[in-house]
Image (cartoon, rainbow, N blue to C red; front, side):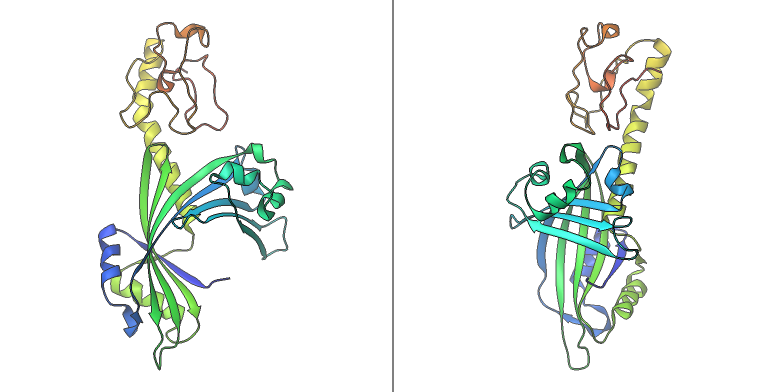
Amino acid sequence: MAVMWRGDVPTLTLLNQLVLEALPLGLRSGPVAPFFQRDVYFDSADRALHRRGVTCRFRVRLDDTRLLTVRVVGVTTTAGTAETFEAVVPDIDGEKALAGTSEPARRLRALIEPPRLRSRVQFETERRVRRTQPRLLARGRYDIAYDVVTVRSGPLTQTFQELKIVQIRRGRPNLAALGQAFVERYNLRPLLVGKLERAEKALREIEGSALARLAPARISAAQTGSCASSEPPQELNPDRCWRCGWRAALRPRTCPAAAGCSGSVLRRCSRAPVVPGCAIRGPWLP
């Protein structure tokens, strides 16, 4: 397992500065190599995989490599150990990869039925990498990655930046000293969690802010006793739920109490259907 150090970079401007400036502790590096990948994490609506200490990830890289990874930590393994099953898959989307015959997909079926799984978190990583070059008295080698991570929830996004140092070969300077040098020079904050945990936090903030913007329409509907008539925010698709993509056009036959409602997911009334696992809970009426 790779030994690494992570640090939070508060702004994109500072991250770009780190890419351009010389490395600390007199380290030298080769040219900057760009890299891009997209990750989609799957789980059931009741978080069954999370409860069992399992993560399921579908990754697509810029070179068209597609990877399905299942990592098991917790109740299904010996305490303190982890098992990782990973395979290159030909499928272009995660749902098909989960239903495939690769080893990770087969292992996953022992834990849960693939139709129960849905996309839970997705984010894109734009990375620039510098590999250090060994010297006579500095034989340690590192990959230093400068990442911009974009978390998506429908049309809504949030980004964060981080620095990741991966140890390729042990030697001077050691990993802890190199990380501390970045902290002291740039005032970075060391991270104890990975991208997935940070992306989950960003997703909660995205959804929370979206619901807060929609709250006035909900209050207005409750006061008037009818379906809210305000138009949805421009950044939301008026025909689909921004969280799960479910088409939610309402008709009187679907909702008898919605006569005169023009049919947006944001104007759903108390008898409208509710999508399991959808963050936009159906009624805007109490």
